[in-house]
Image (cartoon, rainbow, N blue to C red; front, side, top):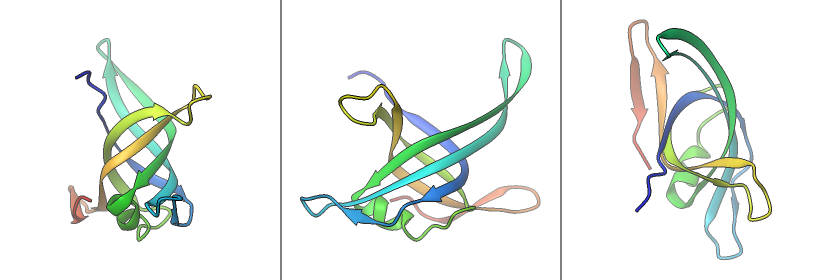
Length: 112
């Protein structure tokens, strides 16, 4: 099996209402805003990006309880938005709502 794994944290910039596929599977679309500092070629680099994402089944139901502006840690894989598109989208398989404290991040909701 080839590797396609993504872990990304950030702020939920947008969340669409929970909906269901024709097969009845819960589905949630969202946008994640990520900001961090990374080391590349020995230099610190400020990284800022937005990533569109989708969650399905139990993870979608869990994320539908999250709010815009909340900090999250997401894990999943990348795929095209649809078969005719070259745009990538994050498919979430695990979601954690984070609470920032003065010294560290604390997980306040488990994975889906």
